[in-house]
Length: 157
Image 1 (cartoon, rainbow, N blue to C red):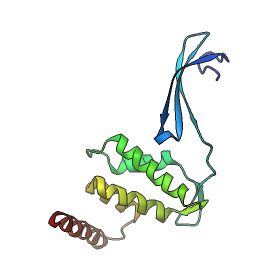
Image 2 (cartoon, helix red, strand yellow):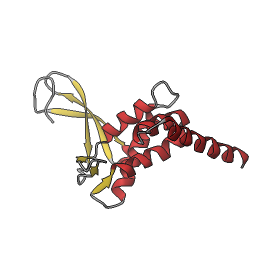
Image 3 (cartoon, one colour):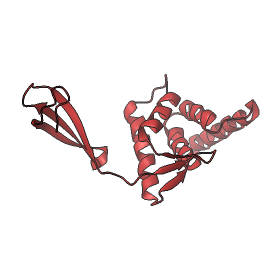
């Protein structure tokens, strides 16, 4: 691995750890010439997963983009970044396990909302409001009523 500081080809691995539930390896490296330390990641090269958007456009799935969207929904909420990253990882894993190379953005959004509903209701509503593009306040209120109804049923059990 080439040093990102001095371009030397000789680096040594100081530490290796499995991440993403064993799907990747994080390596801490040090350049033998300048002593610069840096981190590299090794992961399996996946078959591209294509997301078909509402307008028919196709785009390669990006866990980073999905994570950013979830972070936006969870802004100023008590949701740990690890939880957000796990949601994105779970969604990607579920999508890849279907064996389909293309997936509708609708399915991705529903999977995220399902997981966010279990974590934080406010974040769920925020994500849903952007994802579902509520046309007016009455549709938004219907969604809130459904959350309240589900919440009441859960507390009664």
